[in-house]
Length: 362
Length: 260
Image 1 (cartoon, rainbow over the protein chains, first blue to last red):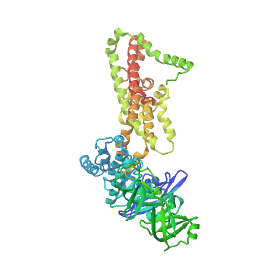
Image 2: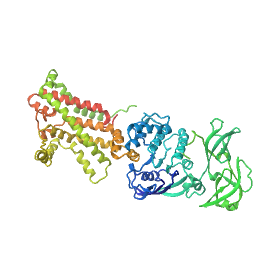
Image 3: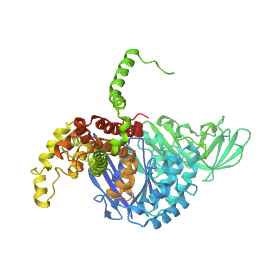
Image 4: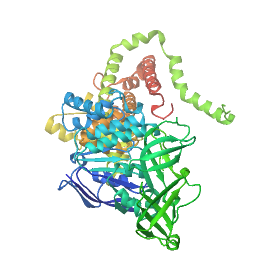
């Protein structure tokens, strides 16, 4: 049931051109700034934006000639787009009723989906009375209720407040894992993209500028945008208090990072913590560094990639790191694949995202 | 803090307010309050009131059934001549009603472009019939439905319709289940205005359908006739229309102008 889409859409005076191949069970994130054309590409796949040319094939079958209602795609829209005059239950039953299901049967199935995805939300409530997170949960239930062949998610976190995000992310991760068809996630948030998707497609000004796994894009960002947004070190793990002001982040890969304790949080163990570290904040040394940096790692250089005047160095440390240096430094220190080096960074440079406390974007 | 309005503007506004409300006040002042019940229960008035109610309600139904889809096409359709079609659709608002009546006569009269065929093939004659009065009232009131409904449809985020389609709804189902409930306030406002307009319709009706008691003589036509024989009766019936119109507008409050 793989998706093979090559959509070219005219939007005013510019065109948006996106090719996407998504396998069964795979999640691809379409990542780009606001206005890059992500949602338009999604609309073209869903059948509500006309294709100027190209094709959309799902499971080997051309669907771009079909009207939207015959494509059998589940979409969770940006801002949820729940129908404001229908109750939560009627919204979720809508895709079944629209396809001719009997009222009672549709409601029963919708109710089952809601139990699973939005258990705390009143069935009779009208969407405008729900919170952003609740709306998104209901939208997800509505997208999945008719067992679609393809799942499209458009900025699922856009109108969700920070406190509700971790729970929604966990729910989304589980939902994506259990959906066996291809999945496309549109987002402007690199962290959502890298943590939820298997592969990234970066869109800038209507064109794909890079595609690859989050790892590949992080290691070799093709554009300045990719470097800024995706080319950052990302860690997940459990945070333990240490000393009076610090903490240790035990990363999922078995590494340890010393960080500044995120005041005013109570000093106890916190799970599902994510942290980012900009590659340019990592110093690379040939000798063991002396100084104030509290994080020091040792490992061999795996790869040196040069783009513009800058080099990205991938280090086989624990956790693995990408550091960014000037090409001048690389020459001066005679760095190359296999060189054993030390890497260091200050605890204060590691930015933490604690469940319920995180900022909206990076 | 309340801002003080400039006195010249207040003065002009006061003159405008007096001018616009004076006829209603004058009608009330000259009303034959003692004979009111007697006049309204008289056979001519009773029939006119019944007929007005029937004709205006039937015309409202026709105007909504035809006007809402037309508004939808104007709001969402993309085709050549849309601007001209919109102008035609709302032109009865500015057309002199007597001109509308003559036009209807040429179109649907006994020897009209379509009316001749209606009579020859189906034996249907609209002139001098209640159906003709309904046709005339529909013609003048439908533009109000079209205007209100089109504004409602245009104010609607098209992504709701997209969402409905992607979720498997054919356009008809999406329209019924998603779009209509969302524009209900505008449709209600349009229908009520259309009803009020149909209730007051005079020129097109008398030109096209004639002034036959019990068949086409609605309240405004009865007022016109009574004016020559029983002025007090004309005033009493007029007051009924004034009270109804103002009650409708008060009930709608700011729905039409957007004031709250």
